Amino acid sequence: MTVPAASALSERVSASGVEPSPPVGRRDLNTKKLARLGWAFSAPAMLVVGAVTIFPIVFSVVLSLSHVAITGNGFVLGGFTLGNYRALLNSGRWRYDLGFTFGYTVVTVLVELIIGTAFALVLERLQAARGMMMALLLIPWSMITVISAELWSYIYNGTYGVLNAIVAPFVSHPIVFLGTPVSAIIAMMVADIWKTTPFVTIIVLAGLVMLPDDLYEAAEVDGASGWSTFWKVTFPLLRPTLALAVLFRVLQAFGLFDLPYVLTSGAPGHATESLALLGYEVMFSYFQFGPGAAIAASTALIVLVVCLAFLKVFRSQIGSEA
Amino acid sequence: MRNRTRVGWRRWVNGVNLASLVLVIFVMAPIYWLVATSFKQPAQIGAYPPTPIPLHPTVHNYRDAFFKYHFGVYLMNSVIVAVSATVVVLVLGTLAGYALGRLPMRGKVPILMTLLMISVFPAIAIISPLYLLLKSVHWLNSYQALVLPYSAFNLPFAIWILRNYFLGIPKEMEEVGRLDGASPLRTLWSIVLPQARPGLFTAAVFTFSACWTEFLMALTFNSVDAYRTIPVGIALFGSAFVVPYGTIFAASVVAVLPIAILALVFRRSVVSGLTAGAVKG
Figure 1 (tube, helix red, strand yellow):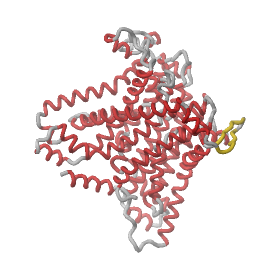
Figure 2 (figure 1 turned 90 degrees about the vertical axis):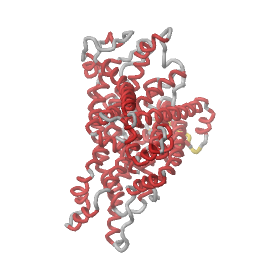
Figure 3 (figure 1 turned 135 degrees about the horizontal axis):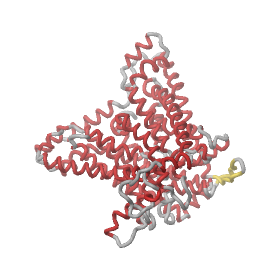
Figure 4 (figure 1 turned 30 degrees about the vertical axis):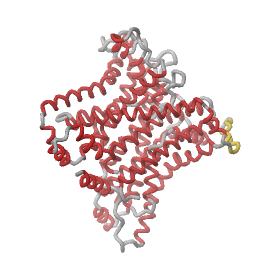
C-alpha cells in the first residue's frame, strides 16, 4: 500500500534534482564555450566562499597542529606538535563541554522534534487562520538569539523574574533558576526550544501538506485509529522531512554560542559551557590560538562526520544526482 | 480538509482549537513580556511581583536606548552590513546559481555538495584563522570585516535556492534570447532573472536576516563601539552589575521589528526557503 506513494514521492523529489544531460550531438564548440562561461560566472562566488571558509578551515587545522605564539602585530608558527590535542584530551573542562554539547543537542533536538511535529499535526487540521498561525511561528524564528537570551534572563531572574511570580504559589521561596547546574541547563534548553520549535513545525507542516491524501482514506476505510495511522502511514512518509529538520537542528545546536554567552556566560561554574563558548574563551580571552584551534577543528570534525552520515540519507533522497 | 476530519469533526475541531491556543500562548507570551516591559517605568521593571501590564506606559526606555546608549549607531551599522552583504550575495549567487543550474560545467555535483556542507559549518571553526587574517590585512573594526564573511556564509544557500529556480525556467526562453544575438549576461539579466524573482526574494530575506542576527563574528571582529552591530550592542549594554532591561528591551523591539515585518511580508518566500531542502532536495 505504501509502495506506490513512496515511489511517487521519490519521483517527485528526483524530478526537481539535476537536469537531464544535454542531448547527444550538440556537444560541440558551443558547449565548451558555455562551460568556460560557467566557470567564469561561478568563480567570484567560489573565490569568496573559499577565501572565508575553506582556506580558514585548513588554516585552523594547521594552527591546531602547531606551536603558536602571538606577537605584537601577528603570530608565529613554531613547528609541528600534537600537544594542543593532548591538552584537550587531558582537560576535564573540555571533556565536560563535549558531553554537555552532545547531551544538550540530543535533548533539545528530540524535544523540538516531538513538540514541533505535534504542533504541525495540529496546524494541519486547523480549518481557519492557518496563514496567521504560520506568521506567528515566524516571529521566534526571526528573533535575534541575543535578544531572546536577554528576555529569558529577565524571565528567569531570581529576584524579580516573572517565572518566580508564576510558580510562587507552589514553592516556599523564590528560585534562582540560573543558579544551580541542573536548573540552569533546563532553563537554557527551554529558551532554545521556544525559539526553534517553530522552525521544526514549519518544515514538518510543509512535509505533511505534500503527503498523498488517498493513503489516509485507505487507512480510514481500514478503521485504523489516529495513533496507528500516524505511526504506520504518516511517520514513514515523513521520515525524509524529519531527517532534514534533524540535520539542520543538530548542526545548529552543536555550534551553540549566542545563548549561553548572554544567558549564563557558561555559569554556574562551567555547567552550561558549550564547545563553541570554550573555544571562544580560550582563543579570545586567554589568547591561546593553538589549543583554541584544536577545539575548533575537533568540533568541525564532529560536525563533518554528522554531516556525512546524514548526506547518505540525503543523497538517496536526491536520487540519481551522484 | 481531509475526509478523516469529518468523523466527529466537532470534537476534533475543539481539540485542534485548544491545541492551537496553547501554541499561540507558547509563542506569544515571552514576546508580550518583551514588548510590555519595554514600555514600563524603570521602577516597575525591577518590581516584584511584576505588573502584568505597563501602568503609565512610557517611551523613556526608547529614548535611553538612542541617547544614553549608542543604539542608533548599532542600528546604522547593522543596516550597512546587512544590505551590503545581501547585495553581494544576490549578485554573486545569481551568477553562480545560473552557471551551476544551466551551463554545461563539469563537477557540478561535488561543488554543490561542498557548498551544502559549508553552509552548515559552525562559525567557531573558522573564527580564529579569519581573525588572524583580518588582523594581518588591518580589516578588524571595519564594515568589510563582516560583509565578506557574511557573504561567504550565505552564498551557498543562495546558490542552491537560485539554482533550483533557474532549473524550473523553460530552456526555450533562453534559446530565443541567444538567437536574437543577446550576450549570456544580457540573457540572464533580462530573460532568466525576472522569472526567478521569488528565488531572489527568498535568498535576500534569508541573507538579510542572517546578517541582522549574527553574533559571534560581529563580536570578535569588530570590538570598537563605532562598528558594533545590533546583537553585539545589545549583548554589551550595561555593566556586569547593572543590566538595564528596560533599555535592552526597547532596543530589542526596534531591532526585531524590521526583521519580523520582513518575515511576515515575505512569508511565502521564507517558508519556501525553510522547506527548500525538504521539498526540493
